[in-house]
Image (cartoon, rainbow, N blue to C red; front, side, top):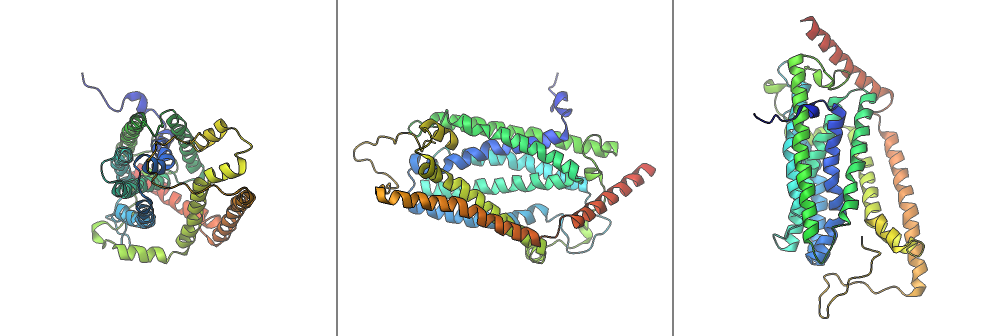
Length: 395
């Protein structure tokens, strides 16, 4: 007797839960990556400073370039340089394509995550390749996952419902950081490697299972010619052609970039997103510094370690005589300089968020695809979907 997959009880899960679980399988990896990858290469693999900053610089350039590149590569079959014709892809075909892509890229993201924790090349080369591979697959997963939100739900209520489950599962995925504290040990890395293998296996299998569930449910709508619990307001049930298909010329990368450059809303949104990403990285990178210089004399060692997830507030490791530190520790500041350092940290902590908030407020004020105009665009999509659904029922 064969074993059916997915089992019947999984097939009964709401689509919002399945969609949200994809955020969980990403978060359990990404939070551990953010917390440990620098410490691993600096303290365990002993990467030198030049290789580290070369890798970070290349990673910064790659991270900036791969978003539009992967956007074009993943959507070029949906893009057309000619007006729509009747032989295009339906929104259901687009969703199936995205779900299949997640089924591939999710497990590959898990494999690229594993590549950080086992030395397989010179530290500098491994650092560069691992960062670029991981960020590439993470971009692809985020791209298709977020694009699915617009395809699975049209109304603000349904999108809020899907986003709620994404936030819920992301919060649950953050627990991997607290679990990692029990396994992290620079001197004996084997237990942490085993922990990362478990995380990667769970994430990869989770992506495979979740995408299979979504694929089954979307394909069922084609057979039923309806939307049995998949989405509201037409979303994926719509069979309206979205692109010109074979009759229209496919768009090139240059045309794609020029089209994006002519969309003012896109440029303003990118500017706002750039400020937000900078602010998030600023918080992540400077939080240990702020905690050490502003609160270290007001909180206990255990509280500081808990807030950081580590070992900044733990006792410094004892090094043997003659051991070489890859990054020499800077000399401790003189007591007279301490108030100046603390004051500088305080100004950074206060002024940077204020400046970022003002820049985002200004940028968002220039963005016009919201409010009445956004409601009009959504209403047009919903009307098209409802008209097409009525036509199907009449046939």
